[in-house]
Amino acid sequence: MLLEELKSFDTFERFYLENKESIAAVSLSDYLNALIAQKGLVKADIVANSEMSEVYAYQILSGIKKHPKREKVLSIAVGMGLSCDETQELLKKTGYAPLYAKNPFDAVVIYGLAKGMNVVEINNLLFDYEQETLG
Image (cartoon, helix red, strand yellow):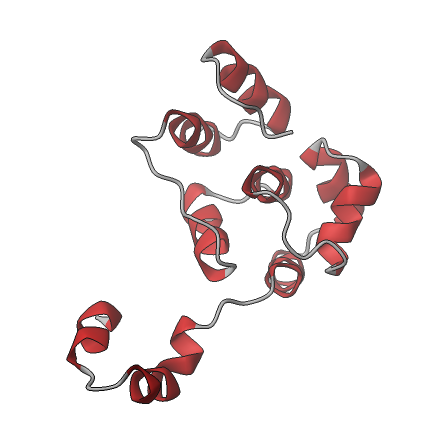
């Protein structure tokens, strides 16, 4: 496990040099575009399904908007139809905190992903439980 390996190294520099590929975050747009290609998705459909401003969503997908809020990334994930596991991987690989079931906002999003809900349905559930929406 990487955590145990990190603790055992005498210098961080040596650990980093040997494990650089494992700990470096991938750019959000690169990872999203790889997923889009892998799944054969259409960007226009993702943008429409994400319920975000068209301009803003395309800025995220193209890399112009490098660090959108986590909620916007989740909107894109839902718009792409990603599973909960795929969404967790997206968050982790791009430097965002993974969803945590003990957090009320995250619990609703996890539930929505597991049930195949769209952004509007998840937002309605978030609103019902007095949580911020995906945007």
